Amino acid sequence: MALRVKHSVMVGLLGRQSNRFHTYTPDRSLAERLDMLRQIPGCEGIEPVYPSEFRDVTAGARAIRESGWAVSAVNLNVKGDDHWRNGSFTSPDPAIRAAAVRDLRICMDLAAELGSDLVTCCPLIDGHNYSFQVDYVAQWRWLVEGVREAAGHRDDVRISMEFKPSEERNYCILADTGRSLHLCNQVGRENVGITYDMGHALVAKEAPAATTALTLEAGKLFYMHFNDNGREWDWDMIPGSVNVWDLVETLYYLDRADWEGWLCYDVLTRSGDDVLGVQVATLEVMRAAEALLDKIGRPALAEMIAEGAPHRSVPALWRALL
Image (cartoon, rainbow, N blue to C red; front, side):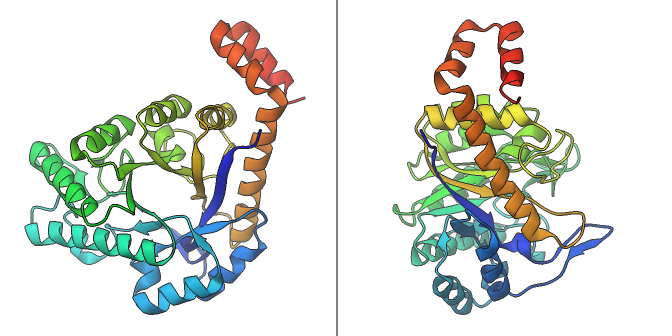
């Protein structure tokens, strides 16, 4: 039984990537990146970012349509431009909060134009760094009100909010699965759900399969980002490079719930300009993880869970690797 998922890559990852110390990959035009994606076996779609891919909205949308790529989601960036410096949905300036809602609506329309029904947004600039810096209750209310207002723009496009514990703020307002589910509950709109980024969940010290299962149970899992790290920082490594069984177990729960949707890969290279190799490896690992799920067998995994005996299940899992 195959997972009912499609595979997407963040198109921006094939362009310039840098940190405080080094630039790892060069600038590439949107057209170049869209063409490079054809060299990734198994890639079925793209996640473009607004506004970076759409400084000229008409030209960006035309390039994507003409490429023939399906769009898994439009990613709204509310952290990079200067006016977001003090927050987006939770800025103390009502005009900035209104701009965040406006951009979310723009992305909803853009997604529909590009044949997608999904906008994903990670409000990384919203939160705080110091004690007594912000009013936490006011910030939360602004976030709820802003997302609710945007969601009312149209019913045929979903808003998928992504959590992360920190970066750009020391303490992001949407830090984990629990707060994300609380947001969905308070917004109270059917078209508002969660983008579950496995790397962010690991940094939040969550058990990814457990909180994925809760998000599925709530009917709020709209979208998935896969990558990996050592639970200390969001390194965006190849999935399964560190946390093998977390990856397999998360896929098990997606499969058990018969979830259908997009898996998108937010994976970086920090070893030179080998962006294609990293993305090819990512999809290869995901196929191998699904094959391992098949090899072990869903009934055998269900029996392990029912029995709850690690002294038998852990050796059996390791024997499956031989």
